[in-house]
Image 1 (tube, one colour):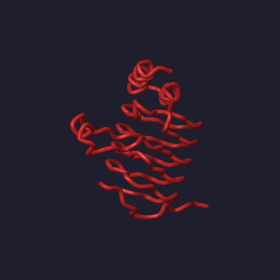
Image 2 (cartoon, helix red, strand yellow):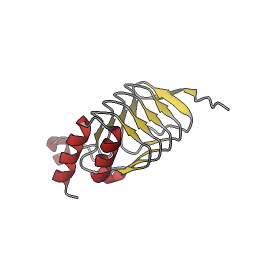
Image 3 (spheres, one colour):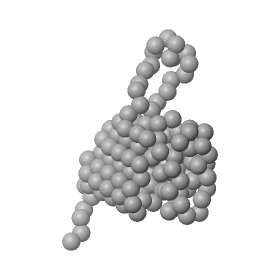
Image 4 (cartoon, one colour):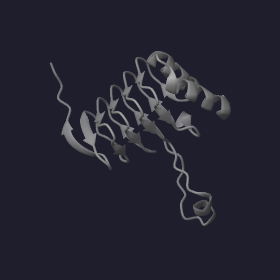
Length: 147
């Protein structure tokens, strides 16, 4: 699908009242989305490399979160060769929960059942069953399993 059409679908997805329709539109934009995924309103996905984002089954992404797979420098920095980073895959593993306003940066894998606290900036992988918080996000505890 063309990037322009993908951007249009993402704009519609931001505002749809149904999270199921939102997940479907995000899938149409090129993001790999599993089943039973909750995507809150105003969640932003990388518009240049959506194919590098994988959201596995039963993931929950809260309102206003940002998932990006690349980082681009200003034209000045690019021309001066001061910054160069290749796009990197982002993976949200099964059952993880991304809190409201969290930012997940390129190259990050959020482990199974991990929790990213609201407003956190995730710049490194999050181990499975771990709660992270802050900027940069750091582990604060393990997720307790019941049963």
